[in-house]
Length: 446
Image (cartoon, rainbow, N blue to C red; front, side):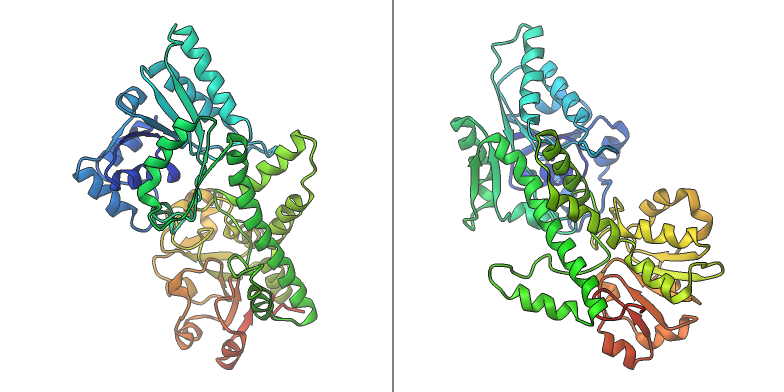
């Protein structure tokens, strides 16, 4: 099948590449001419395990092309996927101006039947807006004879495992009011569900809500465990034991029951805010989701609270090593990362930071550009611990899981670790002479 994907960010590039790898002809479109130029050279703008190799392979085999012209992208396409950003404003409202602009450009350039599939995460009612924009433009062109259909097809991709998620999805959600279009979408996705995972056909509004609901539920589990972890620290419990105690209940399950320094990234924070705003606009108070957001924002300060209780409010002259800057491992994404809050709080109180992350250094330099004189970036985890007053583990990259503890002690000024991801066992750290603080395992500085 012939497919156009508009937007070559995280979702768009993965969507286009994976469709191409299944034998489809795909044109990826982006208004950023420099990005398209680099993509044509095989240089991808994001880090995602396996993506570089997949892009190169499909380009070489002629199934994946890049262009900055929507007209070229949709010329032979049956499906046109919209995968542009919908950032959240200060007021919590999702900005869909990029989607509106794309819909307008599609309607100006289309000259045959087209299935327009929204892959971006959007508020309820966005599909109707897209339909109205295209209808109005076709009317202005006097091409009301052109048929088109609108589909909501939310993505459920985890950064760091996105290719696996796309190739072997738990489910595929398709929102459409047209039976014929539903069948065509099923044909497109059939190669990805040979393991019999479901393709769910539903109305467009429900499909638009499903993405927000899924992310809000997962965020709720995280914030719940973080709140329980704080309670454990106060009463002497161990959140690792609590996790086993509730996670082995089949009604609950184990995923997303880890305590830590809070969630971040491009999805959870944005989608939680958006669904709160959607409720407000429709007269529904989203009390649980609002609490989830509040707990998460507070959690990002939890490691800082520990550290200040240990070292005092004034950190002038103190030097801290940081392992992990991205919001999660296997990505370079710094959006809403807990490291941003933690590092800025340390710098505000006079400390300096030496930071290491396997992939996110360049992104971090942009985030902390205003205070770069107080942050040193290093290309090795060992360099980040040289003569530091304490090590702070923020992102759970695999290479941090089993460090040489004797080597750590040799290089650090003081053998003190603040672990925001509960990577290590408190008893082992104590046996090896470390002062160790983690989340919800009764290690909080009392």
